[in-house]
Amino acid sequence: EASVCEWLLGVLEHNQCRLDLPVLGRLYSAWMDNDAAALNHWAALLAAARETAELQAEDRHLGVALARLLVELGITEARAWQTHRDAGWPVLFSLAAVRWGISCAQMQSGYLWAWCENQVAAAIKLMPLGQTAGQRILSACAERLPYLLREYAEVPDDAIGQLSPGLAIA
Image (cartoon, rainbow, N blue to C red; front, side, top):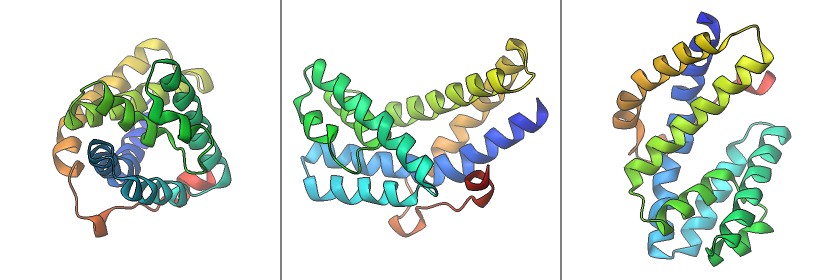
């Protein structure tokens, strides 16, 4: 439990918060401004930052699935992203937030919480962890999220990025 918690909090801070979180803010602004060039730029940066073909494929798979769902829910801008090579999950997640009137800060918070929940659910299934251990790990994540959101939601463009060879190897 302790090592899973430490691993997840490390990946959360050093990957999600240093790359996805600030880029989400830029994607949100690009959707708000209908700025296709900015959307394509940030989507391509995220795709390029995924360190393995498997991580790129996973992000694109989730993004395309969300694009299909958003189209079914009446968000027509998502249609073009069903076949876009850089249709990552954060791109479509930010579109949904903008079109449903969710603030950027709420979107970023929800994104990180969803990531934590998904990772804990996977850990429970893959390791000998019980539900109670999973809840303790989620509590540790929830305790850390306000700090991380304050620290990393807005960072300069040249500070965006991550390097996690351990995650890529794993």
